[in-house]
Length: 308
Image 1: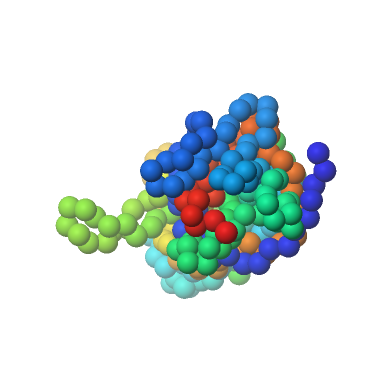
Image 2: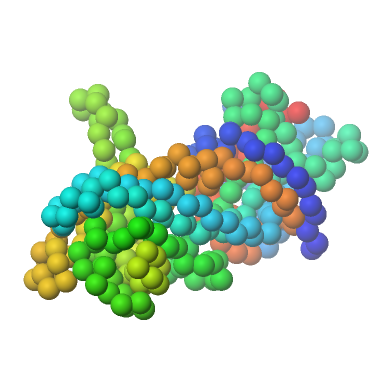
């Protein structure tokens, strides 16, 4: 079916929506909290029937490719005795692709609203816009080869790579292997009530390919793991685990700590909803798009009395 076009403005509600989990996977019904559940029937569009004969349909946008540059600084380095590695600035260039999902009215007493997205009342804590994203990162090419097909590889750009043992001596086109790339986030320790750093995501066996003295491409990632789906390993403090030297015995490792500007990443990936999106009805079970976004949405969780 053809796409339709709609223009949208930035919606800060996405940050809160991004950590919610949809549980509406069964028959349509009004819950005690006033939420109307959708119908999920394989091979058919997803619809929600509200009071007054109003019907909304789940629609999906065409994929939009984007990139964000995340500045990073070397904080600590147990690998190199070179003092200049501390405080060194780098940039991580992350590439990603995403779809936007919304509910559009297909039947409504106000004819002018047909084909328009449903909106929440201004008093709703998440704001008036109701949408969600399903996002794929270039880092996920091993897990989702079709969904990430055509995305450029991520890059790490630095003035030099003295902070990585042996990386500077490589020739263009040669590879460098990072054993682990781990990212931390502040969490509340329920036992003592204090905030602690805990690993939330990471990469196993990250292979870099040298493009120049200042640029390494992320050629391959064996495995990406994460506890919070929309967070890729570029948040808070990053711990890079690598061989202590090019000739170090197997298992002899050292660590480099990087501090990224995660706010720039979060604003771009989570909050930036600007764009011209072309939509078509989403057919349940036709692909993995909505299944992957199940980690993020809340468009089905709005009580009916909060919908305009």
